[in-house]
Structures are given as structure tokens and as C-alpha cells.
Image 1: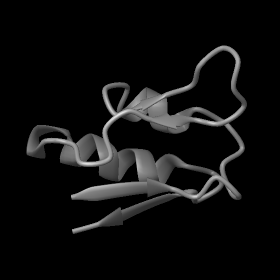
Image 2 (image 1 turned 90 degrees about the horizontal axis):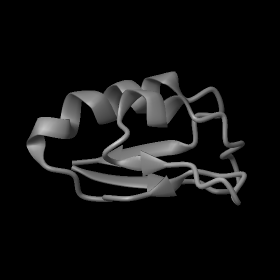
Image 3 (image 1 turned 135 degrees about the horizontal axis):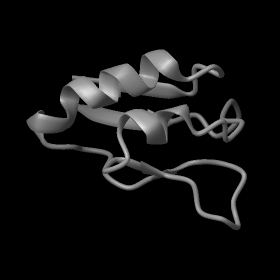
Length: 64
């Protein structure tokens, strides 16, 4: 699994962080999420899929 964030769409809602805090972060000095692990381990796959589904801006892309 490989994840990308479309920063033209990301509005920093932070829903992805709630679902997968080990993969995404929102620093205090930023208005957009930071991708901590673009190639997460299989144990994080379900959380990443949930994060993408929860993103109101649909800014997360998942590739196999």
C-alpha cells in the first residue's frame, strides 16, 4: 500500500489523524496534514482505508 496526499485538496480537517495517527500528523504550525509513513505496514491498512473514507476533502489516495 502506498499513500499520497493531494495538498491542493487538503484542508487540514484532521479526520485522517483520528483514524490513523501513526500515519498522519497535523503539526501546530501547519494547516495541512503531514504524511508520516507513505508506505505503512499491513497492520495499518484498515486504519488508512478508514482515514481516506473519512477525509471530507477526499485528499488521500491509496495505491496497491
